[in-house]
Image (tube, rainbow, N blue to C red; front, side, top):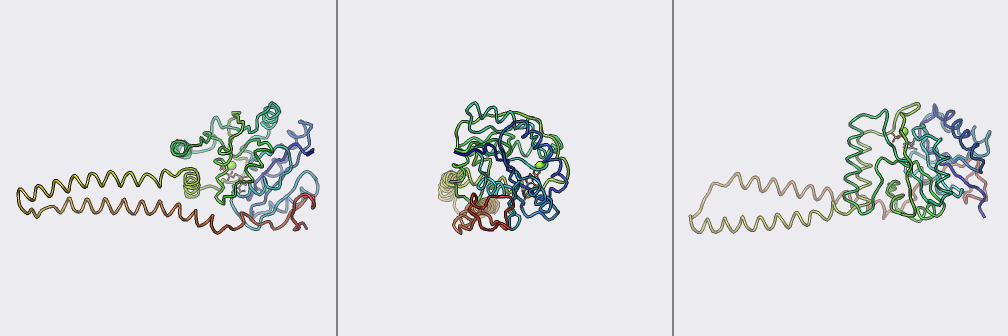
Length: 321
Ligand code: UDP
Ligand code: MG
């Protein structure tokens, strides 16, 4: 039987200013729960002193374990690495910047004990974010939920409690494009939400910019919907029907009124319109194809450089220093 109850999983990329306060708040909450826990920190190729601090922490506190990835792999993959090595009966991914208040963990654990497999924390308001970010985020959830069959809860990040059975399900998903929110929703199980007000980052800067967010949105959509691919078949069908009608009209008109040279405008419009649609379709096929290529290469999802604080026998890695 597994006696370790909770695994807190924290992806960390250049968060040196947040670590002290993060652990202080985590310890306070977790010690009050009177349960067994581990805190797995994944250093996702930080360029600042995060790793040194983490190593020191793992020496001072045996509950803190550190996975040092070989480079920056991105938050979703860092999270997967943490989830893979987590041993607890429930796993809780949480951001290092304290935008996800650790104080909610108690409530999550209560609901988990009541029999829920996933307890996700949904943001009621987003503080410290521009109206444009809120607007685009809202638009993204609308689009992805409209396009895909599974429903991804609005305004929900990765902060949630997931039971061991869901963790095992997630581990069985081999895809390289890890759109975690989608994966968490895809697995199903008994899910429930709690609501909270998201605070601004404690220190430091967000690692997202609009270009990254756009690509993140594309990852989400292409991972969970084929509609962007399928729609062009229908568009093509409609355009073909309209073209056929127009062609018949032109043939009949020519037969009745003779050859009619002017027509430059309609020609140009048709060529440009169809050319545009063809490029767009190719682009969309390319988006999917690139991702298929990524999957087919079947490279490992991440590489671990070293592990600190893990029990050698428990992890299956021999890289511990
Ligand atoms: N993060 C990471 N790798 C990255 C980018 C971010 O592990 O390449 C971590 C980061 O350290 C933080 C969490 O992911 O703990 C959320 O990052 P951030 O606050 O930048 O995202 P936001 O809250 O703006 O969505
Ligand atoms: Mg943040």
